[in-house]
Amino acid sequence: MSRVCHITSAHPRYDIRIFVKECVTLANAGHSVSLIVADDMPDEIKSGVSIYSVGKPTTRQDRMRHTPNKIYNKILELKPEFVHFHDPELLIMCHKLTKHGIKVIYDVHEDLPKQVMSKHWIPKFIRPIVSRLVESIEKYCSKKFFGIITATPIIAKRFSKYNPNTITVCNYPILSELNQVSVDWNSRDNSLCYIGSISKTRGIIPIVESLATSNLKLELAGPFSGDVTLEKLMELQGHEKVDYLGIINRHEIVKLLSRVKIGLVTLLPTPSYIESLPIKMFEYMVSGIPVIASDFPLWREIIDKYQCGILVNPEDSGEIAEACVKLLNNADEANAMGQRGREAVLGEFNWEKESGKLVAMYGAVGQGHGSQPSLG
Image (cartoon, one colour):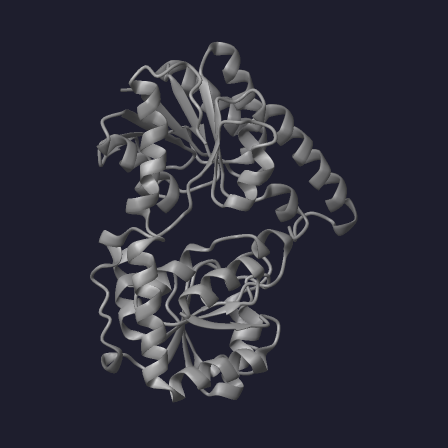
């Protein structure tokens, strides 16, 4: 088995995709797994994974300038066979690691060139330049990496042009986490929920404004981003129907998904979101509730195929309100949508099934199937 080191400079140490899913999955498969993070917590061993911290940066600039070098030195100390990294800001540093004979895997969570175009902290007039620059850096470095793992098939299509060892490992929910969710429709409240990062581009303003029309309660959970605050949200029409729960843990998410009847995933049509596969949509589905989702082509394929929700214009609060009321006024059909969505996740869109691709990739190396096996 292999010595694998996951690294992140921007994500929390218990990140769901990085730690809970990928690190623990590889450790359970018999690999020696470590994780390097940048926080102010002590080193520890958790779920078979050795976690090391290089210290929490004081600012974004500190993180970009100094954290990669701290991680680099820790990697050289640990001497892993594989480095599996998750943040684009580590691209150049990880490119240096290839010169030490370390096999580097780039885990691409989002389409960075497209994502740059909606970054509020980057001035609009230079976003196209930054987008082209990061795409050229990704292209150059990826050619030198051992392999690429992407969170969606659309991202994989771009990276497969740079590196033939490209696979997709989607960020689907862990069934064992959500099996506790009650799917009894009649025991649920006539309320909606939104779980996840809260921002303008994730559609929170039309969602709140829709409550003034639907007169329904919204249970809201997650962190606020820099472009919107709870105080600003409380200035909107419909705000009195919002119950903000703060940042909640996985156990509390299970309880929340057990008591609501509709899950909202109405992200705005930014270039990166249109081609994303947000985990919240699949968590709603496996919880047995219908989803109200943005009418994006990729999402339409899923919603139409499994008839598990309603597609809307995410910028139209009236359309969101109409969809919510329609579902709650047609309980039998809404319940049936929830059941169809649940069956889809149980059969296809789950981590237990998806993780096999990750294990197979590392397993092929550990069994001596060549120094550069195909990951596709």
